[in-house]
Length: 147
Image (cartoon, rainbow, N blue to C red; front, side, top):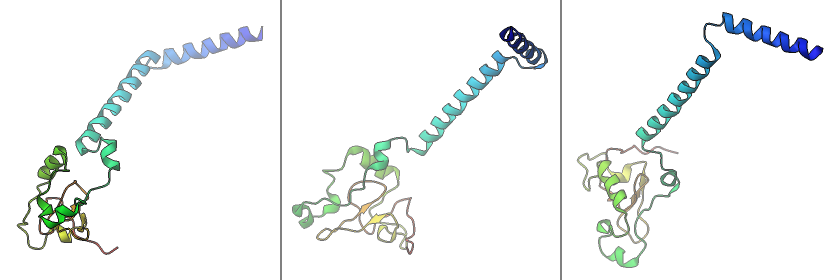
């Protein structure tokens, strides 16, 4: 008997809500689902605009200069044999120039510059792989900070 009363009471409450609610449950669920999809889609678009969607790329450490001693004797800044084509394209897209047009904005005074290893003439950059001239420049130059 008690379960019958509870069932009747539940139906009365649901019917009251459905009559006085201007938005039926189906419409509410449809709108909630659509909004969720829209937010998920916009988040994906925003992430792709930043260019940081590849998790492997975020975890890779930047490569400074080649390790071989034979490269040190020649101009190791010209050795791109170990650099993937994608990194060369990234270098171009960042506006890398071997000689800076700005005398006060060279790679060797940039926060992102990796100094050359002993015996090498070229350093590296935290933004892309491959050799970097100390007197070079790119559009992402950042002043060094005292840390």
